[in-house]
Image (cartoon, rainbow, N blue to C red; front, side, top):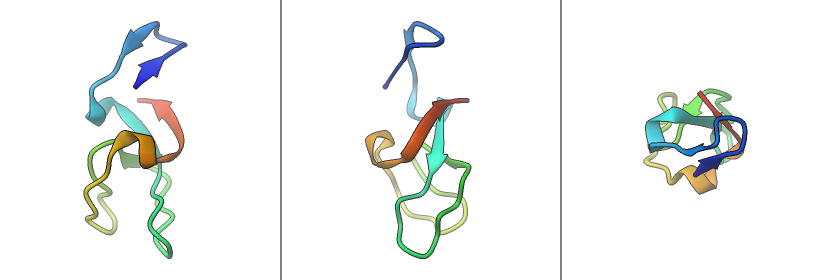
Length: 52
C-alpha cells in the first residue's frame, strides 16, 4: 500500500487497521496477520488501514 502521509510504499507489517474477520474487529491488526484471531491477511482487506 502507498501512504500519502509518508509519500512511500509500505511493507505489509507497517500497515495497521481493523481486522475484517466477523466477530474479531481487532483495531491494531497488521497488514499481514491479525494477532488476535490469527488470520493471515492482505493489507487491502483491513478496515481503515493506516501507516504504523
